[in-house]
Image (cartoon, rainbow, N blue to C red; front, side, top):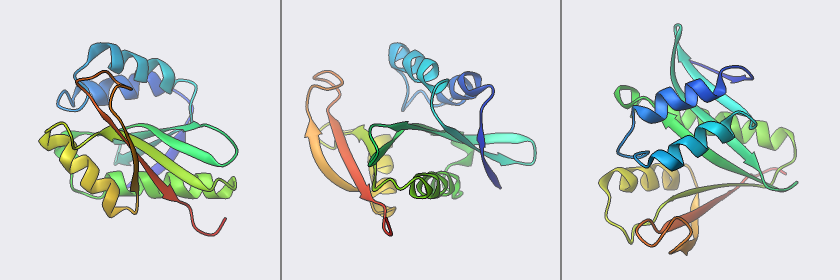
Length: 154
């Protein structure tokens, strides 16, 4: 597996992968926003041979904090270490730029969703910690859990 930063075709990669994951990205308006916003953000891809298997896009909020804006791994590639490798690459990228925190938003456990239960467990296993629940950020039917990870050594 190769992880690398890309500058071209970000919107297309984002669109292709997110559309293959309707359990996580089934709201068309949100999906279109992710695709549009991916064009102007740092993006890293995972490749196996010549196939892109996943991506991660970052947002910089300030000189201290970066956020996983959106990440998607092709469903048939889940549980193969691709997401972990992308997050680790993002951590190195941010640490080299002296960032102190990496954050991510996920669907809160106050709404039952097996897919997002797996997502939260993934982030917790990587050292992210829940910071706050925002009950209406994404609308009352989609409560948001805000997670943070301190980037050691900065």
